[in-house]
Length: 475
Image (cartoon, rainbow, N blue to C red):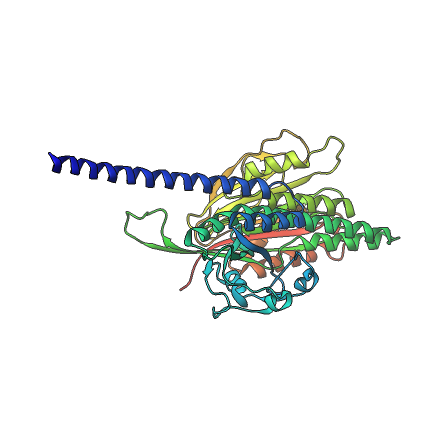
């Protein structure tokens, strides 16, 4: 009997310990969820970049129980990291510091996209004392994680010196990675808003000093060009053919999507625009539009439209959902401005192209077989024409070797000296003739053919063309 009672007591203790561990795990998970909820509230409470950076650093330090925190942003043009905001007496000195991508621990994280937990910062081979020497602040241990938005590293978030004697743990690193996700999205939106505010402010200041229309148009052109991607985009996929599936014959599919575009403003600057960026590891987003009107108003409307498109686009939205949301933001009862627009999301792995059309010129698809077809689908009204407009999604497949060409009416409505229009038939002839050309060459040939047709007639509208290719990767 005593043995049985002993066994029962032993089992009871084991069950109590298991229940206690489960309770503790549940409490930790609840605590982590509440902390992430707290972070989400903080980072979404402001769109001002400087205010947001302060909130990110203060919240990260508090939740991670760290002495300090910093956000270091990526300057893509220079390939450097910089402190946009630095607090304390030596803040000005810190803001002067620039780190090359790959330099120091933060530079390594920005280069590799990997998170790190370091127990002895000064003893790490990647350590750079450039910042510590300026502020005379010793760093014992640290966590550093990348800030990633829409597949692009926009900066790094780091916390320094955990309070007390204990070092940071792997769980701390996981928590900081969870904090970085909503932080990155909010930060990119704030950066876009900040850039827009600075552009508008600079525009107002500069425009006030200008007395002639030529100056105004030159400023508008600078704003327009400043919002456009400066180089092409390439996204590769290597994996199992989606049509065969993992359970099929295991045939590998190596596909690559390439985006290239060109824009040439007219003398009277309009608001043609384009953009493309990676959404996730398999999909790219692209858009091309044409704002009505000319000059500064069109340039500003274009800038606001592009900011909304980039800020609102996410992996969960379809092109139709995106245009519906952007239209609700743009529409004003007293506005006389609108924008035709075409946007799409291409899945490089499957070739699925989801697209939505807001009253834009119909694009062309050039098939690998040489066939050229006009892309048709359900159309909506241009943006900012009707406040409750719901934009529809359409679908088409781009097979390997296919390409889609999106353009503005500056191509088809270009006129010669006798006011004859260039038209769709001549455009299709160029696409057939140049079907084997690389995107950069085709863009040049399209613009050159319009110039040959115009024969010296003044270009009255912007010309913009966007090409998306889906090709097999040549190993």
